[in-house]
Length: 112
Length: 119
Image (cartoon, rainbow over all chains, first blue to last red; front, side, top):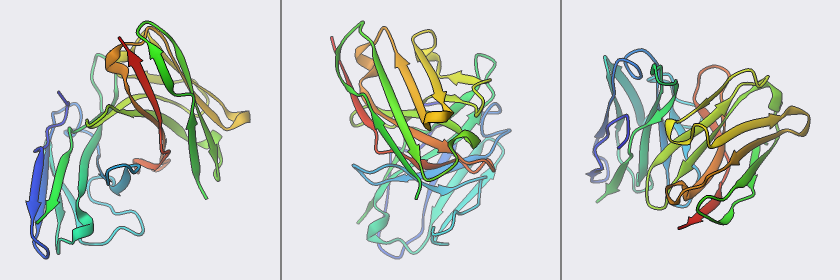
């Protein structure tokens, strides 16, 4: 079971807007930045959003991130077929048992 | 061009050991924290360990503490993961990833090397 909680699946039709949620706690999302990664099956993950809502160069502005309290969201607007992939949220966790990076379980996005 | 290339994966029996390597190029390796991240077949991403630029800090996920050791050789632009007392649940593709200096996440990833632990 992952430390960060994501819905296992999401879907939408081309042109639609979809959101993917990520729920954590005070030791991770509550006090640290949230990151989002996109992974096409068989490929290495790609950084999509960093520091809650920043996009690396080359990532379309259709992708946006937000954070509130111990939760975060990734929004994809103008959905396209090439957006079909797995999406993961991540954050640094300042757990007393030992700090480290934690990921969500991943959300499989299907473009109908 | 930034490149991260892992090697050393393979088939090993439960209880056995394996050493993974990650060779970096295209950037100043000694300036970055580096991580190992694994992905079991059909499963999600799991961070395993990371190491600071000067090796002064290392962190591990609870499930590998006492069994895995992360190290690096900045002169050889290489990152390592020594894995002992391997278990079936350690079966995964292990990838190295660069941690961006500006707290901008894992900005580059390798393609990974498959470790299969047979029980």
